[in-house]
Image (cartoon, rainbow, N blue to C red; front, top):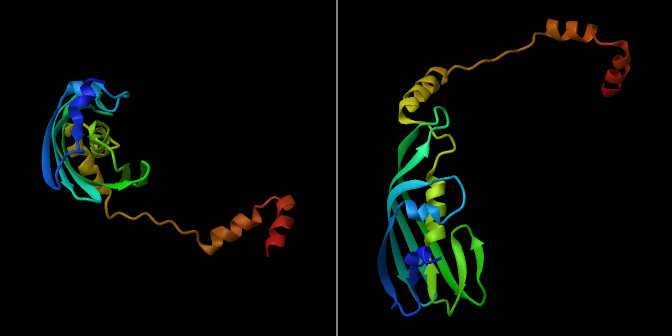
Length: 179
């Protein structure tokens, strides 16, 4: 709980305008969250708030590297991350999520904790197929070779007629119903 407090932004007494915060994200950050998605990394998150009377526009700029495990060889490798995402917090009567990037917070909210949001944005940047860089060149060569080749197989009328002749007589009556 104490580790998460480092990612608190006290918004209650902030004046209207632009405010900038920087957070260093290391291995202890990933230990706060359950799961095997990411366990090690070194990133820098710059959070820029634009506060007005009715809402807070927040920009997250996250850069650095994560240590990921290759799906093919199980080797660990450094994966570069660059995320630039926006969120909007609107003031309202009760807290709720209006859409993926628009949240309603109560007017008397004093603190925004951005740790969970930063973790989600990092998770969104991780590819489904995590390949070590030495395999990525192979993968792109295979894609280039198969790209543009179209395989098309068409049955001729003779093949269709021959197939119809080989139909079990019990099913032939059902086929006639279709016509």
